Length: 98
Image (cartoon, rainbow, N blue to C red):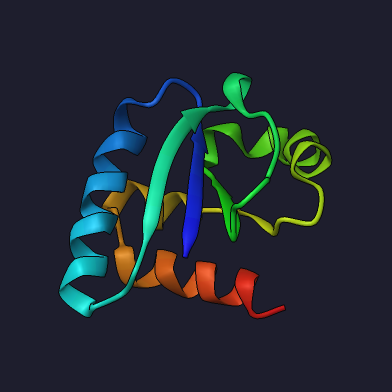
């Protein structure tokens, strides 16, 4: 599964990416995940899902236009702040099972 986290500048999101990679490895989930500032997002080519950090949730409509058919979700503030990987993986599952 290939997921992109979209953020403002990348500091806190890069920490979340590392934690999600570790969580996926522990659970035996094949996950290719990366983070990118919203200004660097080009398209959704090859992505299974795009997740926005809550600090850029106002950009969701613009991101949806850029990524086409790739599902887009916003990580809830509490899950983002606590880096709650189980809940974030549930969000990914909900987005990709539609």
